[in-house]
Image 1 (cartoon, rainbow, N blue to C red):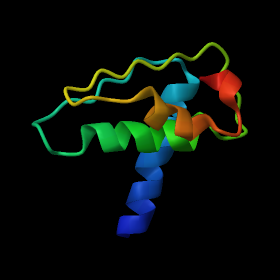
Image 2 (spheres, rainbow, N blue to C red):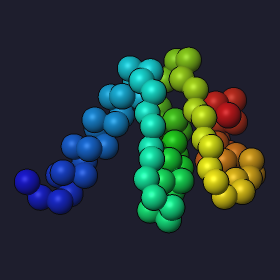
Image 3 (cartoon, one colour):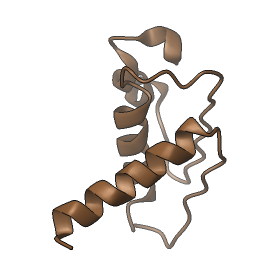
Length: 81
C-alpha cells in the first residue's frame, strides 16, 4: 500500500468516526502536532458539504489558542462555529 493510499485510508476512517458522533481524543507529547492535526481535521471535515448534525468540537490546548484562529476555519460557514 502506498503512503498516499494509507493516508487516505486513515482520513476516511477518521471521517467515519466524526459521522458517527464518536468522541475522538488526540494525545501525545508536547510539540508532536496534536493541535495542528486537530485544526486540520476540523478544517477538512466540518467545512465539507457532508452534514455532521449535532456534532460538537472541544479543543483544549496548552498553548494560548485564539478564537480568531479557530474562526478563520469557518469564514464561509460561520453558523457551524
